Image (cartoon, rainbow, N blue to C red):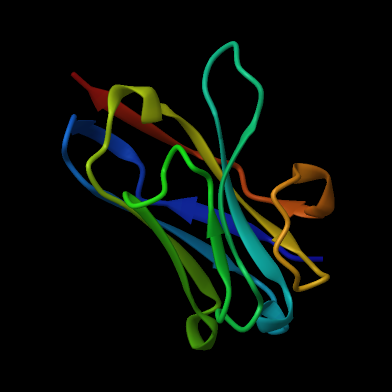
Length: 124
């Protein structure tokens, strides 16, 4: 079992930045691929970015590529999502998730463990 706790959400103006953090409870964290997803009201959960267990591979959705960066610190059991040049359409609840396979996936069904989510609101 892996427990995930997100933090770092909040209210920011368009063009601003936020850094989300996701702390994992398990010492085998480095074997898990990690992903960030988001869900806006009335919309389906959307893939944002993912990173392999070692951190050597990353993948981001086209909608955030060049603005968001995913990274991880396995010594701290933490994954990050640096969000720059935020837009109002980035407003959503952001979730981190863990995939025990260690392989990057963009489909949410591969992820066994989920955090409770953190709200990001971008004002225009």
